[in-house]
Image (tube, rainbow, N blue to C red):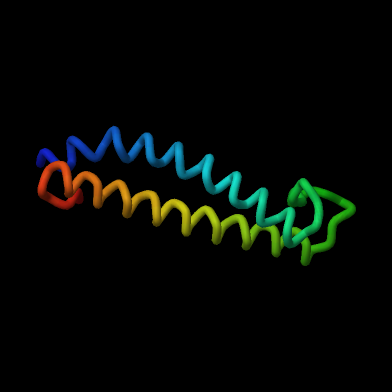
Length: 88
């Protein structure tokens, strides 16, 4: 196992947890602006339309994917700066 892989394992775990928290907060703020309410609908909310549920789920998925990619990329870049090699 290369040093960059060893160095990236704990960094990757910490960044994964951080990205989840960041994405959750970003989604909550985005939903407040788009949905004009504090809480996004759950899939089982009987009083919500299909459109509300699916738009909420799509937005949440997109935000989580973008935040995860950005955080993973930043972590890999940081490991390369520290070790000189890109983590696999």
